[in-house]
Structure formats: C-alpha cells, structure tokens
Image (cartoon, rainbow, N blue to C red):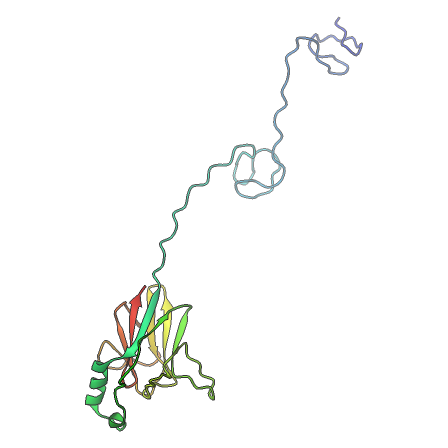
Length: 208
C-alpha cells in the first residue's frame, strides 16, 4: 500500500485517499477556467454560470471583432443670398398699387449671405419696440419698405428647406411668379430657387 508524502496510507496509487496529494508520476489535472462573474458580454443579462441563460453566449469566448462602420455622408449645408432684384421690382411696378410710384429701386444694394442653421429661420424687418428680431433682418440699408416686420419663415425638413409666408402684407412669391404663396403653408425649396418679397428683395437659395 503506497504512503503519501504526508505519511498517509492510501489504496489509490495516484492520489492519497486521505489528503488528495498526488503521488510522484501522477497526471497533473488542470483546473477549468472560472466563468465570468457579472453580466453577459453579449446581451448584458446577469450570468449564473459560463453560458448565458438568455442568449447562450459563452462568457469565456473571445469577443467578436467589431465591424467597421461606414460614416454617413456629409449633409450639404444650405445658404441664401439676399439682394435687390431689378426684374422682380419691374414686375411689381407693372402691377401698380397705391405705393408703387413712391418706392424707387435702390441705386446700391450689396448682396448679403446667410447660412441656414437650426430648424427655423425668420425673415423680416427688425422692430425693437415690438420685440421682433428676425434671423434674416432686411432693415437695410437700403430698407425695402414692402417687407413686413415678420414676413416669412424658412423651415428645415428631411429633404431640405421650405418657405412659409407669415400672412405678410404684400405676399411672398417664388421664381418670378406673381401668384403669391398661400400663407401658413410650407412650400419646398430647391437650390437655385428665388424667393421674392417686398418691393425689390430676392432671396436666392444656394447649396453649399
């Protein structure tokens, strides 16, 4: 009967019956790795063993490589250019009206560019007494007296921007048409469109 290093008699010649100590030449047993304690690395469910009871994932398996994602295409920014438009002015004058003769075409009107940001852009003429501060302020100089204090609104959408007439006194027009836009109804715009308001102001939509 073999005796282990601790002096115990053992009927087993590989491991001591008393203390479990291996005799010389006995095969070495490698302990199995302990399962991950915590949450499943795959679905996040609490673990109660090596394999997740929710999704079956092996907590000891190497995590799968994360696939590279393709970045979304950059959205092209829109802007508008505001200026005096002789063609539009002449069409307004041709229709006449009580104030047509008193409003002349400005001899000098530098173009101004506004980048469209956010969800809504107000267009009009500033009035501190009434608390009106439009994002695109057409107070001038030169000042177009035919533009209402809060004349129109540019509204962002998934496909681009739309123009909304805000029940202005003289209306809002598109691409030299003299059929005014219906107040309160968004009208989709495309790059190159021209929005007309007042006596001579044209707002041209630009992509980029």
